[in-house]
Length: 182
Image (cartoon, rainbow, N blue to C red; front, top):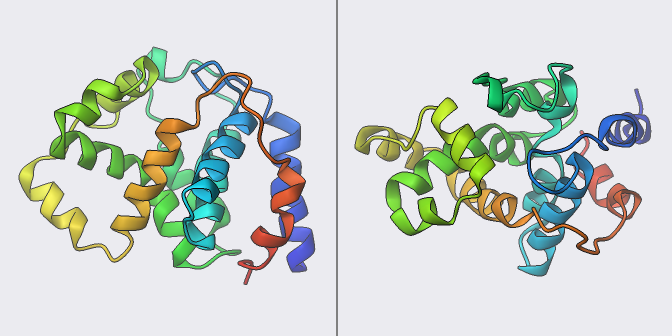
């Protein structure tokens, strides 16, 4: 597959199933676009912007329904997304995607204020995903060279739940995503 075909394949998935609800008041596609938009607005590096756009790609890979967290199921979407994208991107994109759930657990360990600011859906999924990290898990997480990018992505992920927010189109990210395809 050519790099253009890879990006088109990924975008086709968003266009085909991105209308599904995210568990908040936005769709999967709106959430992806908002997360990437916030990354751009905060002048994040291009790799964090792309990882922000693609961070929930794993949610689009299963047909378990939109209410999996309500049923107590952890689809491990962070791993599923990284696995599905592993042949197309390098670690600078894949690792923040893979680690964005761990980053939520890490931030919950580090800050009660962060926990207090989580949406109800994020609180529910936190419990299913293992709850806040322990001290030892937190220390181990900080040894990952991509942990800061994952934490940065996570903060944009938490912000990307605004009903009716104006964002660039998915297609406007095409060239940027293409620049990271290997």
